[in-house]
Image 1 (cartoon, rainbow, N blue to C red):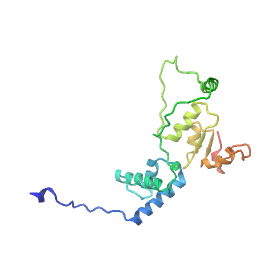
Image 2: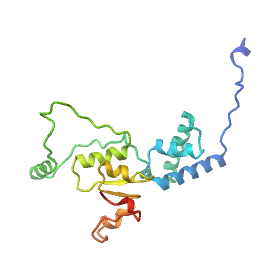
Image 3: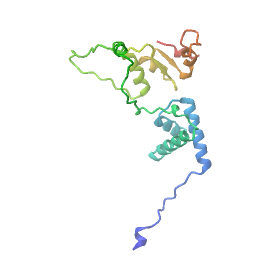
Image 4: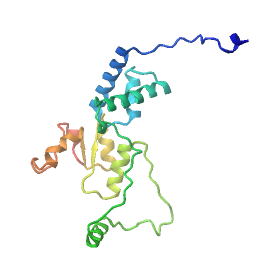
Amino acid sequence: MTEALYQASPIKRHRATKADMQARHSALWKIVTAMKPMTVRQVYYQATVRNIVEKTEAGYNKVQNDLVQMRKSGALPYVWLADNTRWQRKPNTFDSVEQALQETAQFYRKSLWNDADCYVEIWLEKDALAGVEAGRAGRFGLVVGVAHTGQADELRSHGADLVVSDLAELLPWLRGRGTGTVPRTDDPGLEPH
C-alpha cells in the first residue's frame, strides 16, 4: 500500500551547478548594466530572449531570486533595479507656517475638470511613458526621458522635453560643471522636442 502512495517521480529535473548560477548571474549583470534602471520583469524578458532562462514562471523566479542574491551580496547596486511598488509614506513637514504656505502655493494646480461633462483617465502600460506623460501634465520644469532601446520618439511624443540614453549624461550639468545647457546624446534623433 505504501508503494502506491510514494513512488518516485519519473521526471528528472536538472539542478543548476554553481558554475551555471555564476554564468547566469554574469549574464543578468550585463543586461542590467546596459539598461539600468530596470524592473525585475524587464530583466526577465531580456533574459528569455537571450535564452538565459526559460519563459515560464520558474524562469521568472530564477531571475527574481538571482537578482535578490546579487543585491544582497553587493554585486548589483540596489538603485539599478526599479521597484515601482515602493512609495515613500511620509507626510510633508515644514520649518514654519510660511514655508508650508509657499510650498502649497508652488504646487497649486487649478482643477480643469470640475465642470466637465465627462470623466477622463489616461492609461499607459509602460512606466517610462506614464512618467513623461505625468511630467507634461504636471507642467514640470524639464521632463527627461531615458531611452534604453530606441524609444526616443515615443518618449518625446508622450511629453519628454529631453531624451537621453543614460541619466549619467546629466550629472555634469546637475553638478554645475556643465556648459549651461543640458547635455544630449550624440544621436541627432535624441534632441528635445
